[in-house]
Amino acid sequence: MNTPRDSGCTLTGALSVTTEIDGSVTIVHGPGGCAHHNFSLFHTLCIGRDDPRLPRLLSTDLAEKDIIFGGEDALDAAIRKAIEKNPSIVCVLSTCVTGAIGDDVDAICRGFHGIPVISIPTAGFLGGGFRDGHVQALISLSSLAECGEKTLSVNLVGEKTLEFERDEHFNEVKRLLFGIGIPICTRFICRSSMEDISRLSRGSCNILRDSSMCEVGNYLKGKFGTPFIGSFPVGPGGTIRFLEELGAVFSLDVSGAVAAEEARQERMFEEFHALKGKKVQFRDSLGNMTDSEVCSEIAESVGMDVHPAGQPLTVPDPFPVGTEGVRRLLRQWRRACRA
Amino acid sequence: MKQIALYGKGGIGKSTTAANLSAALASQGLNVMQIGCDPKRDSTRMLMQGRLIPTVMDLVRERGDAEISREDIVYNGFMGVRCVEAGGPEPGVGCAGRGIIATFQILERLGALHADVVVYDVLGDVVCGGFAMPMREGYAEEVYLVTSGELMSLYAANNICKAISRLSSRSRSTCRLAGVICNAKNIPHEEELVAEFAERIGSFLIQYIPRDQVVQQTELNKKTVVEFVPPSRQASIYRELASRVLENRRMDIPAPLDIEDLERLAYEYSP
Ligand SMILES: Nc1ncnc2c1ncn2[C@@H]1O[C@H](COP(=O)(O)OP(=O)(O)OP(=O)(O)O)[C@@H](O)[C@H]1O
Ligand SMILES: [Mg+2]
Image (cartoon, rainbow over the protein chains, first blue to last red):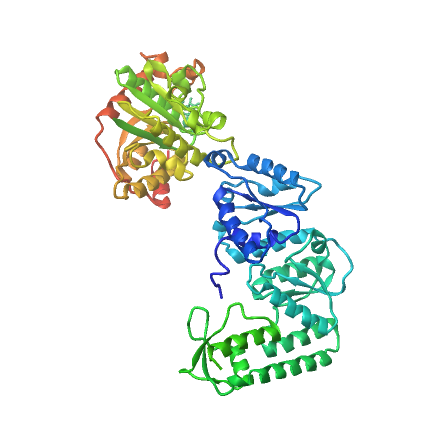
């Protein structure tokens, strides 16, 4: 489903990737406003995460004159200015207006050598939204990967860096991978260094954040021959299947890890015995009734009674990842039921 | 103040016709202004003794639009015709249409748009909204289509009708089709064909201008026909056009033909 999270400004989606690269400078090639409202958003986010840094954004600050005569000179100057700051990489994002007048952003970027200058097409009026910006950025930046032998490891692809529970989701996947003895090769792209990105081709399997990253999964499969798993695990059964899927990909016997995870889930359900027998119903984040399969599964495991007159419980979007995600959710629900 | 715009296929003779029309109107003692709305900036050359005057966009590029005064962009040509060229970006970059819009805003701000007659000479095809600017509210109310009897020229004129009829359907729009000018290629039955085309789209043929060697001759001498050889037949035709334009009261909302009808029409008149 296309949620408002996937639509919106293409630029923001791309910036959610480029601002995560250590030492990067991102140039927004367009009117000042395009950079400004994004700057504010990312700045607020940094403050919320106790990160004192300012997002490293530059704008080419185009005015009508640049639109009439073309904005390419302004972009060239901005890239030079960005390079003076000694960045690890310069990412150049196009905007609606520079897309409309046909500035050849790719060609300008190709004219620079030494520090990588990467063009990411993000003119939103061409029909993209936030998700497309995110996807475009990952596809463009995959050109930074260096060829190398595959190792017994996985990449995490398309983590949603603006997500509130980003770190919790990551830690849960890391825990599950640790349980079967598979290391993470690189996070593409979340809190990444240029060196991390260069390792992209060496992971033997890409784990996509969710199905919205499918295009990236397919692209990387074509480019590096890396198979992918379609999503971070969701729900108790989903978490078990995730382990089994990894086992299949790596031809590993994961039965021990699966048994341990099932035991962990059993203990968790017991922890929430107070919810047993409670009448509940599920609502999505907009307040509409929903009959989510994962929720029914959890309800059954805990022994809750799904009933049209039951206590309304909110199903968050995105759904929390893994067994620990279910635990956080059950805590919320227990509070809602005052159990 | 009468404001007229000439539209038509590229190379059909809009600038030649516009310059001679302006020259003829000025010769009658009218205060005339001609505005070239084309990055090629060659609309007013023959009125300026062959000089390519600085364009509004040249000045914007050099100084920014705040530093421009009326004297920088309006040049007096033959018989006091005041000439302006919009100009625009180098071919292949930026947005020429936006340049036309910016030019109009600057002319407005400087209060430069006043005369007995303002003649807008607009680039061949109305490729984007910017080139429809002269047809917008407050500017040209009378559009003249310049065409020959050649199919592709009629095709272009027919297309421009679409822009006129769309714009004229807006509530406050006063832009109308005032007439069709046949700038001939001297092909057989050309006048009848263009007259018939004009009728079919709901307008009329206001002037037939023959193709004449004298136009090239005067061009080489960097003058309009009206200035260089006033007694010539061609000059009297331009003067006739000027009088008819001044008297013309036709203001039609054109009905463009579909392509099959247009082709059939051209075929009927083919030799
Ligand atoms: N009646 C005429 N007799 C002979 N030559 C003519 C006549 N009208 C125009 N021409 C010639 O046709 C050529 C093109 O004319 P002009 O530049 O006026 O066309 P235009 O429609 O303004 O073109 P563009 O769309 O490129 O601005 C010129 O060289 C001009 O000398
Ligand atoms: Mg011309």
